[in-house]
Length: 257
Image (cartoon, rainbow, N blue to C red; front, side, top):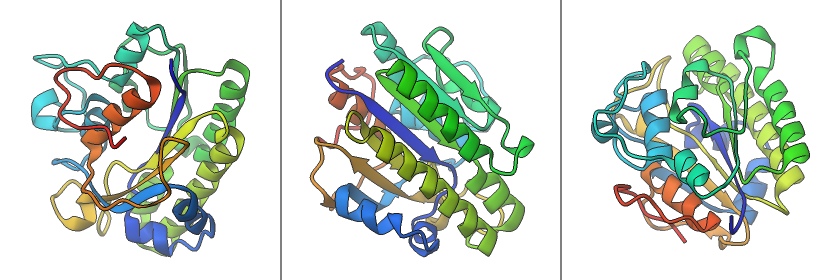
């Protein structure tokens, strides 16, 4: 692999929530990252379809996963995990919501850790601890860290933009900070969300559901606000570009570098 990448997905993170959660590290990210607060999710703005689009660079209407229940693709398109495996690379995934396992085909992950967020007060933090340990010990080419508590315990249980939602979001930012501090010298790091939310739900085409933040940290990126419109479909091509992997010919997004 040309370079190594860590992708961090904070489920249900709204741009205005990130700006209002009170965590001072948000301003640090703005200083050291290429970033946007106006990237777009996909329709339906639901977790599993969104992450399939994030890692496979096609819309839900193309990959066929339209709910949080996985169904086999009728006309399969390879995702970033499969492309990395085909090039001899090593991938790791750390996730707090069990259905997310289906974004990677069997045998494409060398390391995988699932921790049920409802089993602990801060499952996202415990999961980040494990991600740091595994990455430090094994140095995978690509690592994916997915944090769910902002969505589940913050958004769905308490409501988007409530005090509890903002608190959970700040915890997720602290976890992302730890990842950057541990690995920012050796990995390019992308911090993002799959969708936003409103009231205690999401899945519509409302701006509150569809608008997401993106942060790109690493030597490939020039710090500052990104003017162009980005979407979930641009993530896999950007990762492939950083790693020196040829993008899948059916991918619909584009690399931002």
